[in-house]
Image (cartoon, rainbow, N blue to C red; front, side):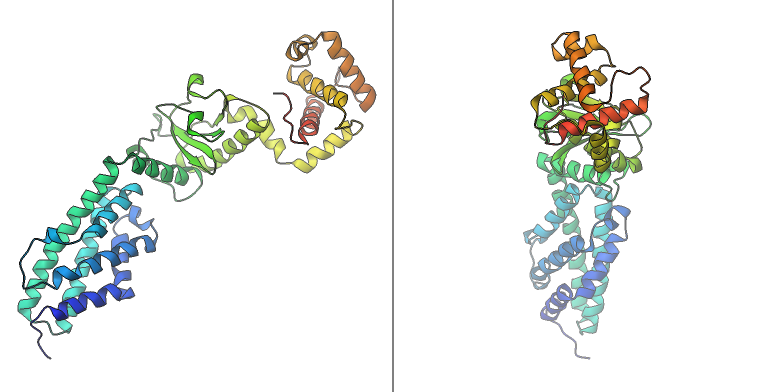
Length: 385
């Protein structure tokens, strides 16, 4: 076998390694196998960094016979790797474990390939020493990139929190409690979180020091250890919060909160609500066809285009919302109880059904409330709150 004494063959070996998908795949697998946090990332996200760092090493190993500081080399790829992992919420220890494992495996592969290519032992010793020096520099720059993203950029923290909230609330790969705590997402004494959804979805909708929020699919989503106070919620926003629950239960609860917030905004609700406050609205909203059938049966004689008929329906709905009390209904509508009595009487004449019969049970009341709400909202006009 021909023995090669110059650096050219070493450079060629590294160039081939950078372009060899099997080598990159091996380094990616080694790095991702070192921790669950790294294994959750896509292979492509790791592969791009591995390829960039191998290519960046070429000039350093092409100058085996020249002295100079390794810090003069381009470590942009290492800085970007550290910054990306910080934004993704991967712990520093896990990042370094992956980097060290990949560097060690890369050194093994480089030595084996150099030996197979006939690189002289003296040159091979220089390769090993420069691999070690280069690897140490890579680690330092990964740490620098990580710290810069973690501490120097508020946008990086926002990105981390948005990613964690998406994972926790949308049913993606669930974050670990330690990740959430590092990002400032606090749990209660039992280790549980409350999730919430707010609309409209701007940041001013909710300002609370113990609620971590992010914009997700057009609405403001949040996690907190306890509910915000009333003065922390914008007057024009509706915020729906779920009871405290462990992380695996949050996606289902968040879906309920998001649905309830949308319904609340449509109905003109404002302020803070527990998701159970809107349980009936959520459940009934899932059956639009049945709602139309109930409306047709009870209110089929009403004309949606008739303002007087709409006034009768609004009065009836307000009557139900106020516990069938004439005085409270009149106060809510700024009218006289006799006017309320007259309107309910006219509704009975038109529909041939009564809201004031003494034997009306809770299911009949539910049907009436559902029919009136659906009928009034059929054209997109919010019924009274």
